[in-house]
Image 1 (cartoon, one colour):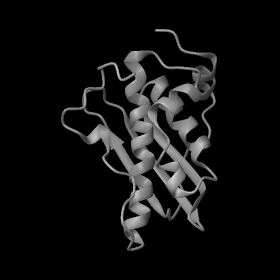
Image 2 (cartoon, one colour; image 1 turned 180 degrees about the vertical axis):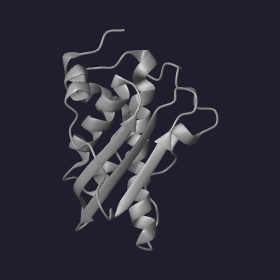
Image 3 (tube, one colour; image 1 turned 180 degrees about the horizontal axis):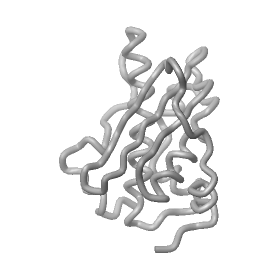
Image 4 (cartoon, rainbow, N blue to C red; image 1 turned 45 degrees about the vertical axis):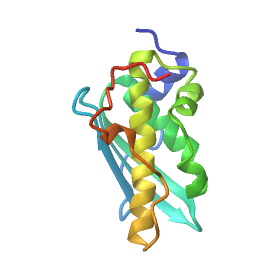
Length: 145
């Protein structure tokens, strides 16, 4: 399986690794079929993501997608960040092999869960919509392009 140089860079030197103390929102997602688990924590100021960190247990693509999604989302409004798609994540990394596209789904889902967690904690309606990776029919090995 060939990875792009950018995937390898984010795997070897991931950005925003860790956990934010006293986060405003937390998103935890995983896929029992492939075993990947992601946790995203974030801080929000004026409805913008002011800080974001991740912890991922998974393959190189899972770590790279977690890293890039945190870079993409930092500074965005909540409504902008929930619109980040799996394809945008893959494109930002210069592409992902079809068998690893599920990693971009987990990364975007983790972000969405963290955003909705923040909104619900503040008495607001969730905005992320359905979370693909928690769908019982989601097959992480199915090509998702």
